[in-house]
Length: 279
Image (cartoon, rainbow, N blue to C red; front, side, top):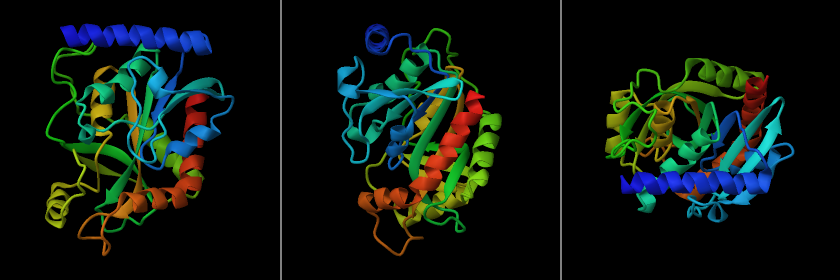
């Protein structure tokens, strides 16, 4: 129980720190920005921001494209919390840094959780720059963020995962994308621990299992958020065709570049979605 008590203490300290800097913080929605999604936070109206490493319990990001800033602002009638960058399992610090933003959002009263990522396209019809709303996932990360003491006393020990990604939120995301003329689909995401990209043989196997896109994040936050009772949805930017489908060798720089090209549609879709939630 020692780790749980330390986490609880950090959550209390983080909440107090945010109140000291921003006043009473009661967000309706939380968004976590994956690779290439960070610039969305810059368009949050009337926002305030703090670096992760100044907030108790959070730590600086280590991956290019993850700025490590926490933003808080108002959209319509609601308030949104945006984590501009995330921590990953492959960084070697365990589940703690991945779990903490979700636990903090829950403590602050968040009801809706939007997760974003850059993903490799497995489905043959996907083009670079398309978006995919997650309908389900396959966890091939080699672990589960719920292992260990319960992160919250209200969590079930054995959470049901029949519908991790809320149907109503998925429908609103798809509609927001279509309204902004984005190429947006719905599909299944497979998560691996990374940091190496997948082999062509692995991609063929995941395609047989039903996966439409592949990445190295999102599933832990979705699993924990759903277990905490949050309404969860997730959105991928197809930043490259997966290994064996792509004719090029895969590089993180190409992922960031592709997301940058698709950014206007990504921004328009997410801002429309957040406005829908706020009203």
